[in-house]
Image (tube, rainbow, N blue to C red):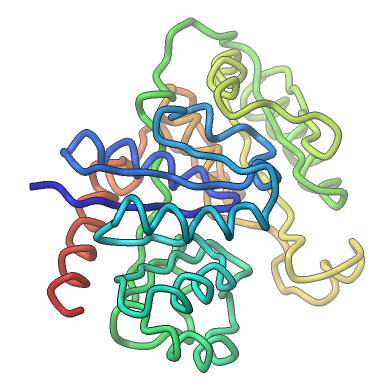
Length: 293
């Protein structure tokens, strides 16, 4: 018999991807989100599962109401400690899984733990391995963000002589320069640059956009650890992100090659980035939490 699972999230499309796979396996899944926190329209990938509110305050209130009427076995909360506190204030014993995605926990486990320990959280999930640094030894699990393979499946042929680079903030200048040189010298391709600070693509439209290209150049400056461009370059030994982004994995799912900053060319979606792999781990976490509650 399947579980009743309530996902609550702010800005993580992973909640939709995981929930779709959980539903395929017979679980009853609902997702709650504030529309303010869905700038790319992730909810449109599974509108039958997602319930929205107009405001963040409305989300807090709807969470309490949804738990009362839905009676979930597990509440899976993505990165919002305030909502965990709200849930725990009203529902003292309901099992909670807390899912961290980045700056909400990176390098601050020691700061967060006093509050977290008071909330009787059954398990913690992190979206990248670096988030394990400083984490407790028990009940903390890494699950790589999976790619929605239902959505990111190729449907048209693209341009075999065109590469894409996406700029995600104002300090991407060196990465863009490097992408232009790589596209010209190594791939002999024209490069298109999308500036996401001025142009956004809806999540469900991203597939059609990516399919226009033969290569995705995943060169990024790591702007999370500094302010100005000079500060980033001066303070960090290597200011470049060398791992692949989720967008790069989505490109791989579409049969597009992805190139990381180390010039390594990737051609296939790794199994650990599939929804099936992610939910295999997630189901085990859920059942362990229920067993130990």
